[in-house]
Length: 163
Image 1 (cartoon, rainbow, N blue to C red):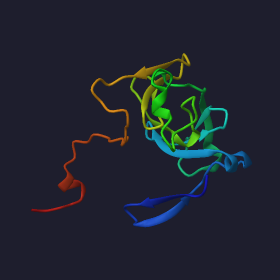
Image 2 (cartoon, rainbow, N blue to C red; image 1 turned 90 degrees about the horizontal axis):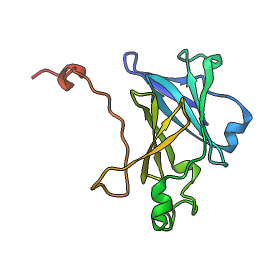
Image 3 (cartoon, helix red, strand yellow; image 1 turned 90 degrees about the vertical axis):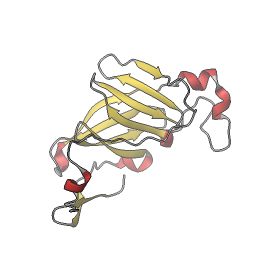
Image 4 (cartoon, rainbow, N blue to C red; image 1 turned 120 degrees about the vertical axis):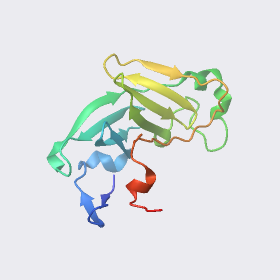
């Protein structure tokens, strides 16, 4: 993981945030995500496992703590329709490629929503360690994920627009 840079909207300033700092991060893929309003890092290892670390106190390096580990999982769509992984640029035959794994969010039932290879949505129960493939009938086999947070604040009010 390289540096983490944040932008303070009220002060209109950039600042560098305290990041996880251990040597093995340089050998693995990492992406950032906000989970339950907390900055989190997802570290993907070559064996197909993933660690979720959370920054409990904003911009305090010592507050980074490992929350849980997600074990290796191959979504059923990759086993059933293996041909989707055979296109050029796709993952290995087992459907796993560490930089194509994404943690989307934590659902209200303490399950984590995961996206594999932009093709398979999976929920992972942190307490039981069980995976569940999510099938959306009528949907294509490619997903582009964007997480939105609902608000009752109007766009005009949020940007102080008049008219």
